Length: 409
Ligand SMILES: *Cc1c(COP(=O)(O)O)cnc(C)c1O
Image (tube, rainbow, N blue to C red; front, side, top):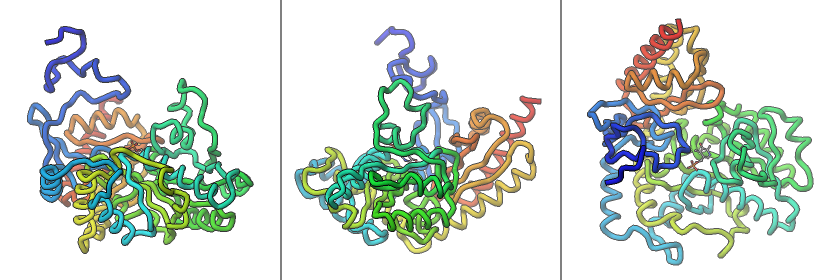
């Protein structure tokens, strides 16, 4: 037993969060013990409706029987072998992802940031092997989020996250979204690629208009640049298509995927055309854990469910139900809920009161939500959420807003 101050002894945490965990997160004081579908149950037995999904990760909710079966079966065989050998589940997953997307080559890693890093490296390397080693700059956008590694922080250019971490990694040109003249002016002899999220999730659920994505596709092609999409949050069915760029009728050259692809198991992927991936030859990139047998077994099971006929149509139907329900909440609280945004089940509501207050008020109503930029509250239910749960979430949000209004009156 340790008597050190602040280190609690068990997961019930009566003494509050353990000081042994580096304090990089301002956490809610709750510990979840188990999950069932769209619900999480805490150590006191309280049931929470999970409209955060671990930040768009638990795409099929908690304890999905098909995912449990897949992980259990694989766990009894082999977990990890490294990438020094062929991995059957990885080859299967790559083939399947290629079949259902623009991609012809897939690299597996463990997180969104790592997928974005891999995408950045793929783009630079493409220019290098195409005879343009000078083309190493990537145009990125204000309000974006690409992860917490030094390169992905530099890519997103969010000064709040960069402060105190030494010199910015060079090689990124950071522009406002929707400013075509700025993009045209920024393209030069050292530009390698343009990188963007089709919907800026962390930035405030800001949908990039389809015509802007189409224009970025045209301008990148015209200048011999690669179009890199960060679909870490928007991908894997979240917007009602398998990938959000399908809404715009375009395809990228390179794409980063993570979050939902493992349904809660940490796995990420870089998808690319054969041409864009031509520089990624043996020895150029790697990941010890990336695409291991356990991770790819789960991701293959996630894909089994998502590719079933009608699955994505249902996501779209549920999204429109959620948007309708939220429109009613907006009618009830027009001064608090200012607008409803997003695509599919990547939904946000912009608020008048501080989003942190509303997240807490939702917690009190046993509804889990996630904050985002621009004072937006994200509602990210599992993609297999039920209609009843969508209505329930809207009614809990409405109650939470009433409490916030009362508290500030
Ligand atoms: C979450 C996220 C990332 C980073 O993913 P991690 O797994 O936290 O590294 C990158 N890009 C986007 C768009 C994200 O939403």
